[in-house]
Image: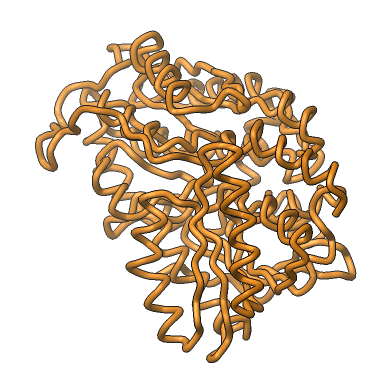
Length: 443
């Protein structure tokens, strides 16, 4: 790779990494202790006749123009939010109340803990929202901020959130589309072993976002399993806070992996570390076989051949649970499945249509969040609050199937709706990722 491109990618990281990664800052203050939240009465943003929900959309326009990264057009997000409001209010509202849906755009290039706190203040104090649908808020202070304000979070972000965090922020934090991170990591390593990617005696490199959640899951789940499989693992913790730490971490990882004879590389923590590392590794003349998952946005890797070395995609394997960012429509018919068709009908009735599933990737997660809120709150009546919602949502179990996922997965104490995955692999014939085999349930 030429040096000007490397320097450009460094600038890319400076401008874009904050949009895709988190840091270790946390908001001060204490959450309600378990058991102290009540199921009686109403939460913030709820009146006798209305309930306010804020949908956050991330503006990548400036970042994409600067970096050259290509992302599929997600359509008119404010109009998509209006379409959901119209349908819900025509079908009973939220606990018999009229939904007031508010759209807020968040500039990706300005992301920081301070910007996340400002957004949280706007939504919880200015908007006084009952619930917020998050997309792309990766800073570690974001979710605790909303929970501290007793605001329900319907998380539509591909962010590494483990069971401990869901429990700590209960009853406020939920995902209407994706799986929990613990289940994902167990399934990923199991899949990689079954696919012959992780074999006894192999030298495995792990590129991991340096966050408290990722460290806890790696130490408690990934490291023991890699050892049980007989691999020799080298973990590279990458601090994604700023350009200097990101570049230093990625370059050091490539050097260390090359020195230790690493032939397999796994990415943990998402944060688009895969895309950044692949360019750095090429510049360091390090080559390996890579594992990939929905957390790494496979479609993004394919859509950016000018910055992502196509040769690095060869023989990639892993797992996928998000068809809209995993595989092209030629691999999974679009629309497919009742949940997806239902959401597309809702949008279509308001004149919002999508050429491909990837174009609908944000709309589908918005729809999942809105329909989960609608379904769980159906019989809550006067007691529309986070605790009552949590009890009702848990009772839905697998009956709630996300449009952006593969199957339902709630119930049994789980606060995440993504219940299934498929083996994901790169196919040089179509220059795309494909699914292999049938759906597998997360544990």
